[in-house]
Length: 274
Ligand code: ATP
Image (cartoon, rainbow, N blue to C red; front, top):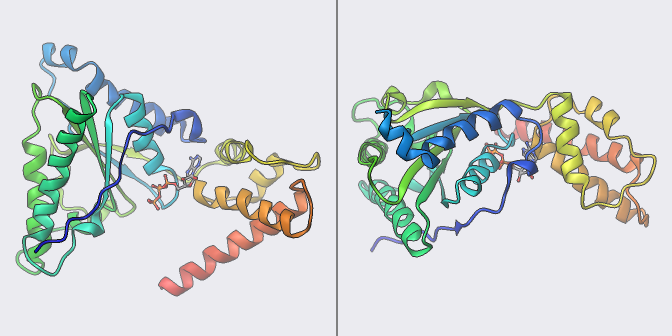
């Protein structure tokens, strides 16, 4: 018997204010959400509904956060899955899980009285890699099912469905996924610049007791190429160093140690996955 994956369905409480930097990506995703909100107008204008948005960019930059904020913004049900969930030994299981995912989205929206549902698929490249004619049959069926589901989304239906997918390997995606009516809107989510890093640091500092000597500008300066996830770790590790030190406040020196730790962790990660 097929094991049913338990899926976390949440009504997202994440707002765009909790996402630091990424001004352009936020703007673009808000614009795309108008397709869900202003659906009547869109229909009147004869505009084809937007079904799929692809978020691309390095790990930990806030792609999942953006999708959650989009769900909150549009008052949609949010259902998340990851490409790796659909990979199974037995042919057909992946495809049937895709079917369940969309079924779930629709029934949850009904149950919770929402007019729309956002289906988020992280690591879309795991199932959406280029099809190579027979080599990976299981993946082919899974991908085909996803395409079928997306082709089946139509304007008049209730709830309205929008699929948001994320990847950090856009170049390996099967072109069939990127065709009009599928993931035809792409939003780049890059590593934050200094201003973005400062913003992200301040978001994650908000619930923490900082000493007067803490200089978030300086930390933003010293964390070149850090992702949002790494910056969140810096603030968290800094708090841990302070606690170990018996200090009630997080000082600049604790955060300096945390930067080194996060940087080193990132390097070891890279070496072990090589
Ligand atoms: P992955 O590609 O690894 O799935 P992702 O781009 O989806 O990563 P998220 O899961 O959204 O990244 O981010 C992970 C965590 O990092 C968030 O829960 C948050 O704590 C922090 N974070 C990442 N980006 C930002 C940001 N722009 N602003 C604030 N926090 C961020």
